Image (cartoon, rainbow, N blue to C red):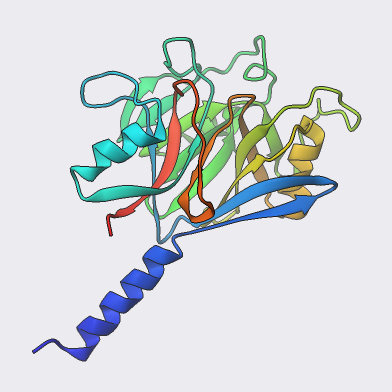
Length: 246
């Protein structure tokens, strides 16, 4: 005989799986964005870079194939940091507790080197965006981590180099986190925007104290709840929410 409590627990699990990631599209200051919110205390966030054969996974479909052997699947994913031509990460990268690339603290060319940049860190039950020098000073024990740049929002302030009338506009994506590390919000613009407007999305619209830029132009999203699975050339680091296969 199946107990009522077991049935209730199963229904609760199904309901949780159905609402693991809240994805939606909404406007802000004249531009539209796709926004996906995750509760880091209840969902499984992971970073993906290389497959078991050592080759870059590169595509959301490749990650899903790798997960299928474990009866798991992606319910959300997004590119998560800048990379070289061989898909190796430009900055700090940790996956399953193993460091692939050290922290880069120096300024440099391109958006990554536009200091301050930052690190997205995944730990048990929480996720945090750290400005890089704060990350080095606090040395959190991240199970997964990816460094990118520039920071979009630093302790409630926009990056000091952002210009309101900046003319460099691209499709952009990034992530912001709450102070308690539980609310994790990923966003991708549905049209080209500048850094100032993208930073304000996280600070003023989403009310997040810290946010990190992942990339532009190559930005891609996997959100099956919205019927979206962007495809293109092979990516480097990818972040995703993993759940049991249905």
